[in-house]
Image (cartoon, rainbow, N blue to C red; front, side):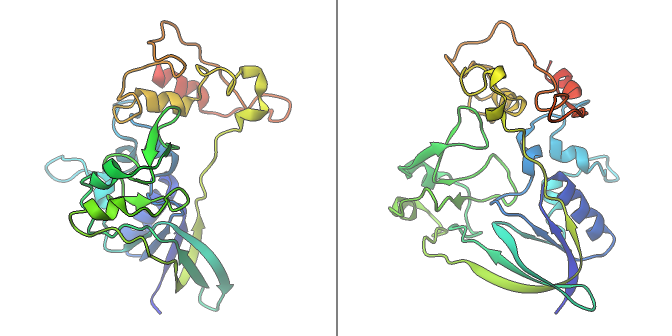
Length: 276
């Protein structure tokens, strides 16, 4: 078996690690449990200081004619194999590294998908969009945001009713409702864990009113409201009544600098200044 490096998690740290290894001639498996790569950074549209896309900030190489490379295109590197909807199921130490088994869940949509959006238009199932929080909605067959990687649709089989309406309108026959999970064995020399992070659980911090008052939102939710691809298409509207706010208060250090977590988060001040 061909040996390579495994990077678990395809947030910004996983992407950067995979690119660094590939540029040094190492073949890489980039493992992601969701349908698309990018992690939390993909929810942040603009980055300080030049309002560039967050993806571009991590890969600032320029060509001879000074045109900046786009990270999403660079991930089509010949040494990087991206495995989405995949989990590490087994790991065994060997003399030369590790023997691993990867299980991949069905996506329900083939790579021949052209992202024409016809499937989403006829899908009868509408659910809360965990990407475009707090007010966004999506269909059971969906695409995360414009130009994700990989750039084609996926089916949320936990929400899908298998009604088949999407298969009737797909112009390239890219939808397969009968896909099954697959497993594959690899040998890898090394493993890099880039598991990412989760935001603080605000349900335990009731004093701030999150969840009780609709207009109390998180920083990521504000970011999505300000995004041109967000639930309000970049128009800042209050989730509670759809009106434009006249004043906004930022509460710092939520989930840090308290009795349970006495440390500083180290980034909330800069993040708030960026939004202002």
